[in-house]
Amino acid sequence: MTASLLIAMHGNEPLSAKLADELHCELGQLETRQFPDGEAYLKFVSNPEARSVVIVCTLAHPNEKFLPLVLAAAAARELGASNVGLVAPYLAYMRQDRRFNPGEAVTSRQVAQLISEAFDWMVTVDPHLHRYSALGEIYSIPTRVVHAAPLVSRWIKTNVANPLIVGPDSESEQWVAAVASDADAPYCVLEKVRHGDRDVQITFKDMDRWRGRTAVLVDDIISSGRTMIEAVRLLTSSGWAPPVCIAVHGLFADNSDVLLAKAGARVVTTSSVPHATNEIDIAELLAGAIREVARDSVIN
Ligand code: R5P
Image (cartoon, rainbow, N blue to C red; front, side):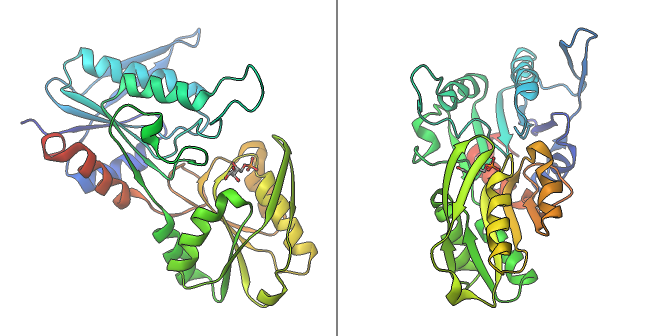
């Protein structure tokens, strides 16, 4: 069987090169550009015929990426690919997981349906599973989820003395508990009320018994950054030293990376979304999951 062809959508080249290396498969070439009117032009320079194609596309700021991605998958099939998998280290649209107000679209379901129609399988890192317990509730293709918690714990153990792991809200407890356990550190969870996209209020009860430790805020996503920024403000205004902020996925809307740095926080993210704060590399972790989901018949 012909070896797999790994394709990087624009912006995913560094991670894709590492994955191709880990998986011992060819890093293929897909030429993309925009026509003057904004429509996408795609050309497979590497021939996908009779090959297993793996497309890598992290879905931070997804709207401009999504159409070229599904067009690439469809083109690969039309050119004879035997199957087409998706590696989306950050999986977008997972937070709209119910109809919060009448008439709203539950976009997590709709995006899941579109991806399931375009691809044969998918691998992702820590998707925001809050009201869903597993991707299988909304995805109809085989999926694998990899968890960054062990890598985050290892980073903390190596870089922070005497840490206290802090979750900014109850939703973060699943990551925070796992990270704290692996890092041999205590943890606590703050209370968050979200009034709007950029309006959150954070409070805590009693953190005094942990004084003297370095607070390490851990969350799955930094989007507008309001959650982390308010948590940093709360801690520093209560006499804590500026904390370390770790997110699996750093989306950094609204210049929130700059605002967090201004607030004194050290920000660390995984390489799921390319950014200067990527201190935790997920390539090896992803490669293991890709091998598993694609099985020997796909990646060889
Ligand atoms: C919330 O449900 C998530 O776990 C994150 O706390 C949230 O997405 C962060 O968003 P933002 O950076 O916009 O406050």
